[in-house]
Image (cartoon, rainbow, N blue to C red; front, side, top):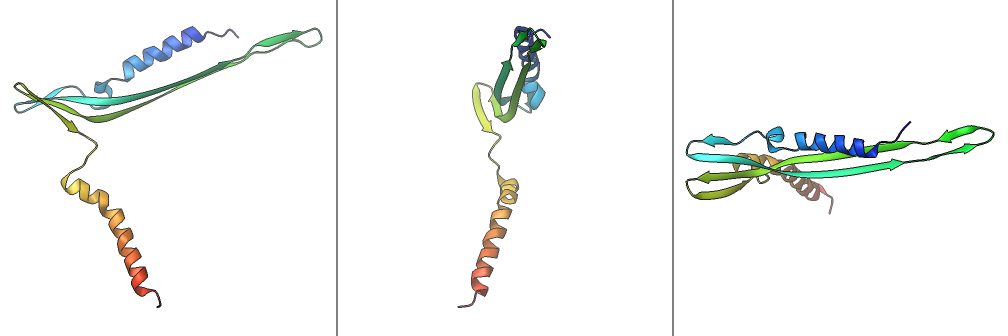
Amino acid sequence: MDLHFEELLSQITDFIKTEAKTETVVGQQFELGQFKCVPVIKVGIGFGSGGGEGMETKTKGRKGQGAGAGAGIGIEPIGFLVTKDEEISFIDAGKTHGLAAAFEKVPDLIEKVIEKRSKDEAPV
């Protein structure tokens, strides 16, 4: 088994180049009325690799050798660059507004109601 770390690294790099694009995650630039919207992403990448060697003994012959590699990639949409004429704005995708924000708070509200009822019903 031959170890080809350079070839493996090249293949991983090519994969990341094709996959870590805004178009892959949230789509391409689009127009909405008078506005042009460009999705913006955050990319995180991690690599790891290891290898081994073997040895040759007089009684058992050649033994050993091994290799391993891995990579991880995280891609997250973070917002949109929005242009209108000469103005450019950034709209954060992480913050919710209106009804969506209310639904995110429901579990906390339920927990507070349960805590209050437990206190009210507790013997004095």
